[in-house]
Length: 370
Image (cartoon, rainbow, N blue to C red; front, side, top):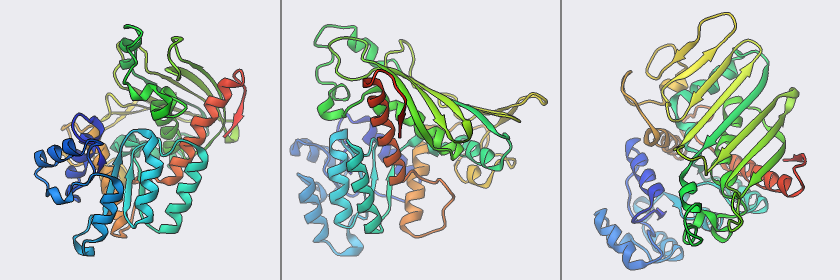
């Protein structure tokens, strides 16, 4: 693991998820920019300090000196955004499989270059759009694929959080040290780059339809904030499908409110991340159906994506664990379901979305092709 030491929520999530799927063991890594803190973390995790490295270059050199059968095979990159491209590229070129946090890169050009690196390496690369790992999201994907909704008319996705609101409503120094609000670390977007892109990915993942054009209206909310904290994006897709993404980091009281609705000519589907074990299917002619994990009426893919019997709720760790499970199957060259983990292609699509919405906003809210 690169990054993810003391105080890193996402690093802890990755470690728990990898353990849940029973295919990984944490061996070593570079856990902190402060080497001593990194070693303290390694001691806490009961790791061999010889596998705790000061820098990524030292990690690569040290691991390549170890016999193949003892060497770390896969590396999770859970650093701030500005390091994803450099670190993932170096690891792939050194022969390591990579699980990378999103956004994949800072620019579309970097994303395309990383795709070339992945393609030429023949190694496994996964991008952790975690919500694709939920069983009922996978059930939604399979229902849409079956044609049960008829012709899709509209797709709505919403992702509301409120954690930034209390920061920006404080003193003028309230945003100091919050790296997600600093373009040097986060990139060109905060709200759309951090959470709006999840909604974008969820739309394309569940429907198999690619968003072709966007019109964005973004808002930094306060004058001393450099990046967007709130925004609405209108969507155009093939076959005259329309949609919208609404996303905010300043919706007071909201926690992690990601929802998606897919509306077709025959039926519709609705799912919410804060209540992830329920998928609702609506129609004009029948009562609302409720799908839940661990039932025979689900698809094989959805049923392969839960670990507990019915009535035992599963959540974000299990969803991320499903992505890690897919990566392990890929490394072992086992047969995969369609969509077991997001790939470098999803990373390229995500970067095109982020750049396009920022460009649309800067051009006075005009339609931009992805």
